[in-house]
Length: 513
Image 1 (tube, one colour):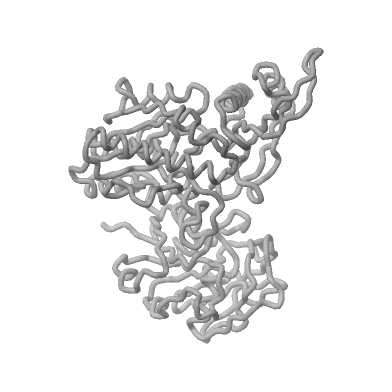
Image 2 (cartoon, one colour):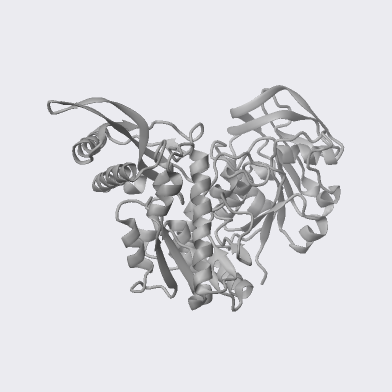
């Protein structure tokens, strides 16, 4: 029996993949497709429902992304979100205009609970708004099902045609009952069974990889982090010894991590793959000398990373595919599609114009971090690997503000090791989504013993998040921070001050660079 599917039709919204993630949380398979995909291609996918995403444009602008209105007549339930809601109204003869009052952030919404979309939702709820246009007049046959003080059509529907629209974003956590609304659409309105699980994704992906690769040779970028480890094991199960994993130790890893990676994935490890370790620290330090700008550092590290893989590919003979552990937050923050560039990621930035591989394969590209961890568990990867702290591809190179030197790397490695050790000793590891030590480029005067010092400040960062798209700073107990601080000051030469980062995302990114 074919699996049931919801399609997210992307009109350039920053939350496009987050919508898909929420649908998958309802245990229904979901794919994001661009608005450039034809109606015939959409039909061929046989979706049980379609969701129009938000987007930065105005529907009345001729240059804005539009779609064939026939999609609304397929008999398949459609949910429009933000721009998608306005597009639905505009395509069916409604009126969309610039709103007299724009709405952003938490907004009180009054909903009609008689609507199937708002079943069991509180009549007065809170939603996340982000719009400057609004639906001034609903299309014929539609009725308004939600309002705010400034938005006369916060939601609308035509139940007979199975068309629903909301001006707000139910997919973000700030919409208090957003998951309930999406579940109502996916399960009750689209009649999906909710029988898709991560095991299904893993099984299907392994089969697809095996079919795509055939007897080709595969080179995998293995860093030892969660993402690349899951990708490597997935490929190992798909093609076995056709896979060669190259682990580039760029000298920017956490303390002892290079040897730990080799112990797990090397010849004595449990996985059926070919493992090559390249010790390239000196090469990276030479390339990074004198470079302070963080985006430039990312580009340099990414470009050198690919060069090394090209070199290793030439050594081992013909290679058909390069596998990377790219996940969705890497992609969206690198500004692919219509999203703005926040930062280039190691897995998606700094690629040369010519890559000497038949194709780059990114089996985890559709997944968020927590989904990758679940995929790892389905693959049987040990929990200590699956639950390890996220670590960026460029490594400590982007956790050092300013120029990267061997001495600065040593400082961060030692400080981070102490930080992680004490967090574990305090029993806090499971409560924090990501935590690490970084090195500022600030040097200040201090007193240690009877001597004046002029040394660096280490910055500690810890956040909680469900999807790594937004994050809140953690309130680590003061006694734990005090112990960490004392240890770092006493045990790490070159540091005389420890700071704690209290900034969320946004406005900051999770990494400190």
